[in-house]
Each structure stands twice: as structure tokens, then as C-alpha cells.
Length: 386
Image (cartoon, rainbow, N blue to C red; front, side, top):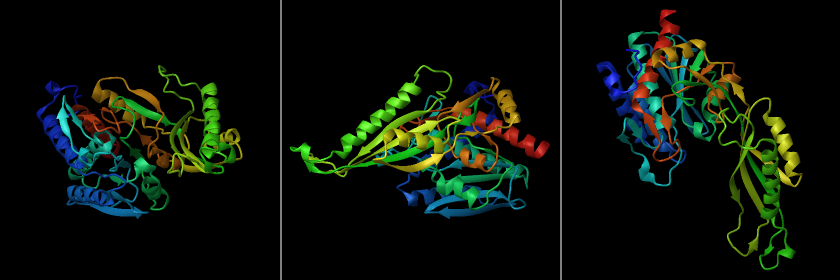
């Protein structure tokens, strides 16, 4: 049952049946457009998941809510702190076409918005949770699903840990890495809005005004030059791009007329950084470069973190796949950072995925079966055999 599923020809009948279940469940989840702008659909998705989990002996389901974002926690009745917690999120990003939330199957992959991030992994966790609780009643295995990871996780995992007192021995988060790549470190994050004020005037008489947008862009250019001089982006690097980066993603003014000099302007930056840099140090440094006339508003922050994965998880991954495990460092961030802040180790890997956050996002079906088998063997060795 734990053979690597490199292709359909190597799959047993049990593997194929599992692949069919996971595929159907993933496609059902993709059909529900659980975006930030659709709270009703997020609720519908939780109802669907609840229907899938109800009826397990010795398992209780609990809902938590913070600022309109719901989370579902499932676990054994006998423990408030499961030995292992499976954790994921149901929310997906917005796409312009509201009819894009459906899936197709091509070349052994499920294509559709959220397939890889992370409806496919959710399907793996849901089926695995049901199966293990049915086979091993009372097993110390929990499940947490949140609905705000794509906008920062503040009302999801952070709320569950810091305010709902969620605990666990170790967490499996299938939201980073890859099948044979286990993430050991994640960069810190600083989403920052920068504002600059000026004085409006007619566009034909710029000498009468102070163009806030031009002044802001001058300072943003200086900041980007600072990053480029100190940490030039190496597009061919194979070291995980383990250096600070700065992306200018949004520029705005309140102007609705093309012949008006804007009196204010704002820009939104996405800054990532590895240790030993910290949020505080990055803010201080950025503030000194932008100058006192720029107002800085942090939108979301996270410190860089070491995930401390279990060596046994890596050993089992290598055993099941038949390929060496690569320990990697990630430029992106996940809800793992909240668990690490609470001192809880995290195993962070996932099935094979691609084109994340696009309409043709995909997840490889065979790798879902393999990842399921990795997690199943790991959980049983930690909680049943030991």
C-alpha cells in the first residue's frame, strides 16, 4: 500500500480506488468558489466538509470565528492537544471570470483554480483523517481548516493558536515544498503601504502644485535601487534566492481626472527577507531610505522562521517515493509561521503542483496518492506503532 506511485502502471487496485476518491473530492471542492469576496461560499464549503466528517465515532467538530472568517477544528474527544495536527485552508484567490471555478482532468492532473493551493491537499487530509479515525478509534490526530490564509492567516491559524488555544505535538501543513522537498525555513514577510502627501494643482500648471505621486515614486526608486545594489536578483540561482527582495505591486492616487496633480499617493510593497533580518530592522532601514515625508503602514508582517521538521517524516518520504529528500528554504510564507511562534514543529511538503494562483493551476493525481501514503505511514508510526 505504500509503494511509490510514479505512474498509473505502478498503482495497485487500492491505489487506483484512492486516486478516484481524492480526485472526486478535489473537484467537488474546486466547484465551491471560496474567495475572500464570497463569505457565503466559504460557509457552504465548510458545510460540505462537515458532511464529509460527521459520523466518526470519538471525533468532535468545533467551529471558531474571528472577524467573519470561520475555522473548523476536528479531533479526538479524549484530547485537546492531538499528537499530530493536519492543517490547511479552504480559501482561494480571486479570478476575474466568476465562471472559472471548475476543473478538468488532463495528463494525470486536475486543473482548476485552487487545485494546487490547496483543494487537492485538503482532499488528501480529509480522506486521511476519516480513514485513520475509522481504522484506529481514538487516534491522537486532529484537523484544522481555515478560510483566510491567502490574506495573511490572522483570523485563521493565528486566532486558533493565540486566542482559541489550539495545541499539537507536531503539524503537517501541505502548503509548500514539493513531494520530495521538505521546507526547513521560510522567509519573513513585510507587506507595506507607503503614503506621500503633496499639493494638488491643474496639470497645465505643475509649478503651482506638489505632485505626491512623483515624489513617492522617486523614493520608491531609491528603495528599489538599494535592494538591487545590496541583493541583486539572480534569476538562475539554485540557492533558493535566500536574500531580501522588494516588489512594487500597487500604486494608487485618488485622482479621477487626468489633468489634476495628485495631492496624495500610495504604493504597496511586498518585502521578503531571510534571517538574521527582522521585521523591526527592515522597517527601520526602509523608513530611513524613504525619508520622513513618507508614512509607512505595515499591512502584514511575519518573521522568518525555521520549521524544525521531523527527521522521521523525511525518512518515510524517501522510503515511499524511492527518491532522496531535499531540504529546502522557501521565499514564500505559510501558516506554518504561527505554529513555529508557538513552538510547534512543522512538516511542510505537498504533492506535485504547478501554475499556482492561475486559472490553469494543477495538481498531479498520482502524487496525491503518494503524499497520502507518506502521511499515513508517518502518522501510524508516530501514533499507533510507537
